[in-house]
Length: 81
Image (cartoon, rainbow, N blue to C red):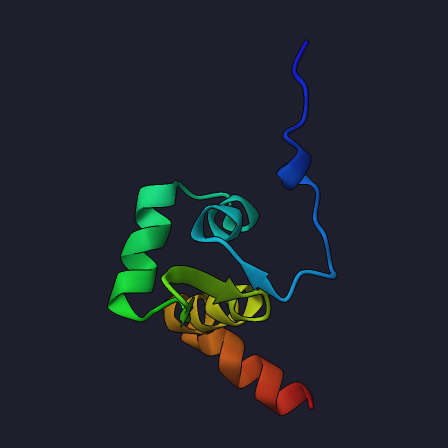
């Protein structure tokens, strides 16, 4: 029987996420998530010596990736508004 990891549940009250939490939300590996953070593609900040990803940076990252992969999506969305 599989048990859920306590941090697997989406907590909308979190303002900052660890890179591992951001990776779980994106359903990608930790190493790939660190690569996106290192490249600046996924926004992150330092708090003391800790690296954190703002919770709102995760959906923004997805939106940018979607527009980059599907440029017609941006045109369709703009004309619908």
